[in-house]
Length: 189
Image 1 (cartoon, rainbow, N blue to C red):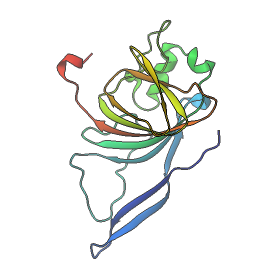
Image 2 (image 1 turned 90 degrees about the vertical axis):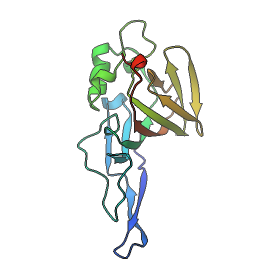
Image 3 (image 1 turned 90 degrees about the horizontal axis):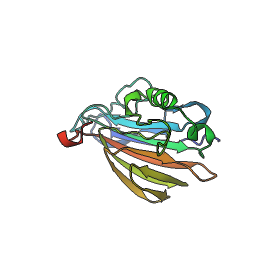
Image 4 (image 1 turned 30 degrees about the vertical axis):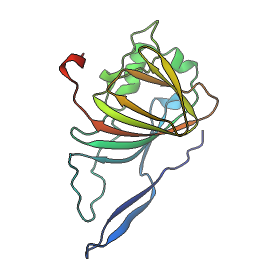
């Protein structure tokens, strides 16, 4: 799959307080996770507090590597390019799935329990996620049920165990806005 860059335009303020375009270019942090079969992460921006501090001209808060969840008390926006799914995902072991999520600092998010699992990359995070399909389609798999989401569809993921399967023959590009959350005691594992 060819890498199509995601453009990021960041606004700010000049020394007189006037609104300016501070940055305009390709997202600087891009990384494929899970080897050749994995999605391409385009990390667009993060905030590390709520409310988020707004100053004149700082950049994105520094992070090392790609991290699945947003910072504690913060947010994250990313674009994922998810290639068509092949046998390597369908036959993935629980250990391989955990290693896949460990690449983004979330090995414990993996819910793959082995044979009979709904999908090898089922996972759960303590976040509210807004997923907006930009192009292509994905199957959203839940513990019970599944549905196909297509360009223009928006998924509100509320800390639920889920997986994504690209059963089509072309890439799916989806934008995610992740917001740090807290499980009610009854929903903690």
